[in-house]
Image 1 (cartoon, one colour):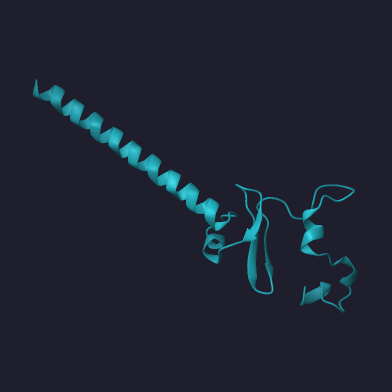
Image 2 (image 1 turned 30 degrees about the vertical axis):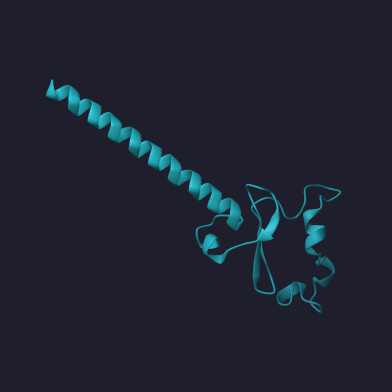
Length: 105
């Protein structure tokens, strides 16, 4: 919080809080940062991953896609999607070959 209202000498400086405090539940409700939260600390992007619920460094390329996951979970998800796609294509190819052999009879 180096700019705008909550900077060190700004009018809302008393509302500043650290990341650790932002992750803890408040007395009157939930934590300030929950799963899916993206925030920047001195130019570095951080995310509370939607999949593993851990605070990890985020990837700017993923933010563009509005995907609030850490790199490792995102890569795992991507791998699972590719595997499902391969299985779907293999199943379709098998079905098409089976249908073609029925036509030959």
